[in-house]
Length: 406
Ligand SMILES: Cc1cc2nc3c(=O)[nH]c(=O)nc-3n(C[C@H](O)[C@H](O)[C@H](O)COP(=O)(O)OP(=O)(O)OC[C@H]3O[C@@H](n4cnc5c(N)ncnc54)[C@H](O)[C@@H]3O)c2cc1C
Image (cartoon, rainbow, N blue to C red):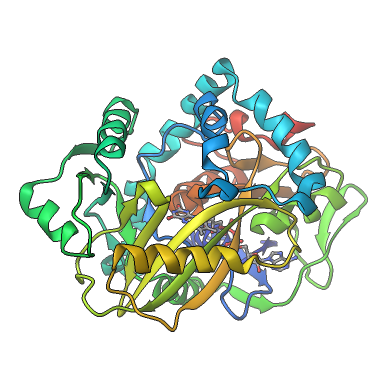
């Protein structure tokens, strides 16, 4: 049996590797992130089953001006990165049309519907069920107008398998006690969840992968085409799967694919907590576009969508703004803060790319999971397993074919 080489040991690559090993395949992962800095290990930890509406929408376009960073919002379009975000933005405009939005919902909904059961299954199989918390999340507002508008908007939104209800008086007083401002409104989702510790998840996935016979090579993979077959330099793999997050663009373009993916960058700060309740699920402070997640003894605040070049330096104003939010709200998170920035791999229609190459029939891909890569990794892995093994996938892969951008 030939070797399958997976490029990328983030959450998507590791979950796919485990699925394939369990199906009896031989698998090696090539990954160049020894320091665990990839988005898979720095994200907000939220299993966001409620986000069934792709962000390529008329609503996203309508609200863009008031969400700009220069106006206090979370959306950054750095001038120096205009050559990166302008073509992306033009494609996004097309993808946000009502008919394409409807097709996007039809494609994303069934993936998200299966994502929590897929997490439950893989968390059990890797022997770490405690890492998956299924206790929902909160959304809070401090202003009365924002609270009524925000609540009404969530009550009208499609939320897939997640349910929303108003926070109880006890929950509201607990949320108010988190900081120095009374909460004007709060809702609680159920059906969504959290990964309790991303570092521990990485450890558990890697250990499960190795225990099943997989090997991990710490190296930067270079792809090439040889007589119509994809190959990874230095590795004798007869099938190749690209799961390299935002770096998949460069790898796939070398092989002749068009991948209009952008680095949609997010920032977090993390510090020890003195008073953030241990069992509190993630809290979204919607007026500040900030999600706060507890990870073990630390608490992390994350925000921002910065459309940028992959190699542009981080913008320290984003971390400073996060620190200000935390201080202004009086949250019990005290510095020194650890600062992190990572790139969501985002395609203009906000759907992932999962499929088989038309350039080389031994090449497969699974990337472009934008804001939902943690949520979608295990279900993506299941699709990859059926696809690579030549079986029927449980969902049609046509909406995720990268040829949609050809
Ligand atoms: C601030 C922020 C918050 C987020 N919050 C959430 C959330 O709450 N819930 C959610 O579901 N998603 C969230 N996301 C999105 C999620 O983190 C990503 O979609 C997900 O991590 C993508 O996983 P991946 O495995 O595809 O890619 P990555 O995590 O980027 O992993 C790719 C791996 O491939 C390696 N690699 C790349 N090129 C090569 C090469 N040539 N050779 C070898 N190795 C290579 C990289 O080093 C890396 O280890 C968030 C993202 C950000 C930035």
